[in-house]
Image (cartoon, rainbow, N blue to C red; front, side):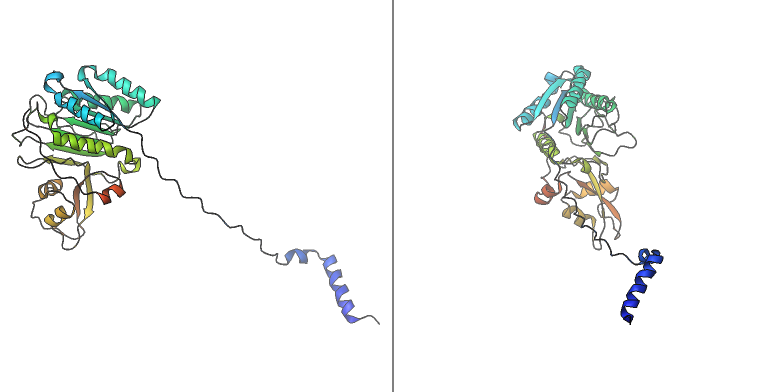
Length: 315
């Protein structure tokens, strides 16, 4: 007699042989999914190389723009590559600066007094045609004929006297400009004139500090939430060179005075930045512009805003 269990096994094999699709229909064992290794974190961005600084005197520069020579000495002493030139060779120096950047890219800083301020904008326009960025432009009572700030300038500061005949260039930016912009009209300060405005030791110190920060500021920070600043500086008020403004929300209980104190800015500057009275009532959630210095986050957290300074007297 045939064992019934053997009959069952034989029948199963026969069924599979006659209908192999049944075997294919049976669920397959799930394949093991290899573990995905997350990519390593991106290395920190390398600091930019030291900037190359070009300074320009105004008309009769060796007599009336000697402050540019003093500033060049201070920048050189601080370890920077800085040279001062006459504005009359503006385009030739511009060509040299562009060639130097193409050979060895490094931040470009342009600083000019009077006609030298006009020259700084001319070179910025020359660089714009070559798609070369300009990290910082500082014009000091530039000529009235000075053009607008082009889009390739990342930071622009104008220190001027709007009632000056020899200077008085109230320089603005072209439409669509997204860099950092700050304008300071010192016409109410009776101690400042066109022939001494570039000689302030305190302003020189701030410029050296600003240039020192440039290699540590990454490109991503240059245009982020920057708000242009324009001031008519009170005549008896100290001068502090901010890079631009930033919008902050008003919290419950904030006042103009408390916001100014918390951000270490003068109350008059906060009021002018927002076209508000110094005792204006604020509403929670309202956006308010606060002047700021552009610094890397770690440095900003570790350092207080430098004290304000006043232009030096006539020299």
